[in-house]
Image 1 (cartoon, one colour):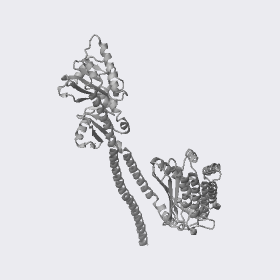
Image 2 (cartoon, one colour):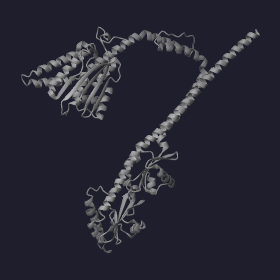
Image 3 (cartoon, helix red, strand yellow):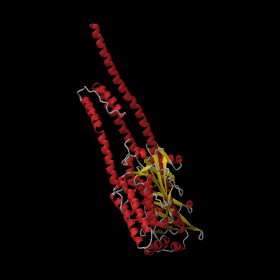
Image 4 (tube, helix red, strand yellow):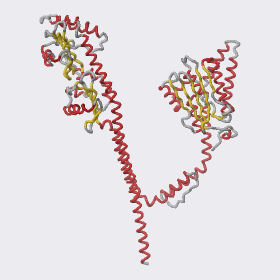
Length: 631
């Protein structure tokens, strides 16, 4: 007895040990799955971050190059204006003119004359840069921006810029961003108040001396406008600096206000510039920098973008996925520990039954003894199988009837516009007495609509479908005469046994007339081929009409797949006939279950190719009522 009790306790202990071991294995299994998944996801996300940075670099590099070209063009324009007025006889007259300090109005009037007559004649559209001021060898200042502001203080500021440096010769010298001291009334906006100064000494070979110094004051806003659009679309900042790091312009308004960039950023840019070669580099792990050097002077266009701003979305997504995975694993572990005994065994049986049902056995009922939630679930499962077995035939019949009703609705969408046009054509031709083509047109129209009715059958012989199309082609031939040719590249003997869904060819050929004939300067040729390819029948309609551009082709493809809005439908119905390619696509999908059965390809001024793919249907697949047999 004691031995028996010991044996029973031992068995319970082994069972408990097995249960604990299984629980541990399940928990270990979860961890073994989680760790590789986390590693793989981490690798994929880091790769995605790298690709995102590379893609961001590629997309912005060309735009930075465009900005550089725009700024270079503006600088070149300033150089051109300077060259044009470097030896101007009209301008020299005013440079040589003596002005009395007691009569300053004469000088101001001359400043206005120079600006309006001489500069204005050169730039009648006010689109080019103009000289802002001139400082002559006589010490006279012509301030074209503010004629009243020609004080000694302004002249001293110009002289402080060392504008008479003998080493300057006739070269341009640019000065970094500063307040535009040529204006007496400073604008409120910082970008209008700040300016980039450029000076050039003008030498007269005839007189053997430097005649004057040209001064250009370029508003910072004029430089900023060259890259404003890009600056507003990126998460970082754009700087335009000189070769030694002095600020010219920036998307950062605080930097513009200060007139300089931080020493740290300046040093980092200058240190990296030598290795960039007009490309991208990294400023540590925090920022990416791209530098493009001007081809005209030593200016550099610098884009500084925080790495986190580029990869923010993928980083947030990674952390969220990681947290969700950890939460799911913890929840699963608790559920395993709490529900293992009550659920695993009956769920295992239920799992086996589901596999049998998946394999096609709808009689795989599960014996149920439990009176808990799992037992209820199994009872509902058995009841569900019973209802499925009871109602499956009725459901299939209902679905089939629904398809037939939907097909009838689609068939009822045939637009009578073509019929009306044809009847109008007949009326028009009837005014010309004695023309036999009136009778042929009427006969073709009657034949076409008799075939479209076809006793209410949906699946018709392919020969009838082609005959229906040829009736439509004859009608169009009477209308367009020699403006088109129809080429039937199909051996009727090979398709004698084939069947097709009714009215799928005419809408495709009609599409060629709709998008191919208008404005065509040569006869349009339409080719139709019907070929078997394995278990499929491939129908191709190709024309050499006007074709479509990419935008129009995209619209047509969307219409084929999704249909049109009410307004688009109304507009289209004014111009076209037939049920349309969308209806052809919908009916093929509805009746045969074929997705993307209609494909269209086109090129502007080349032509259009439409391909229809339907299953191969023969007389063995048709029942006595002309419908597809159940499989």
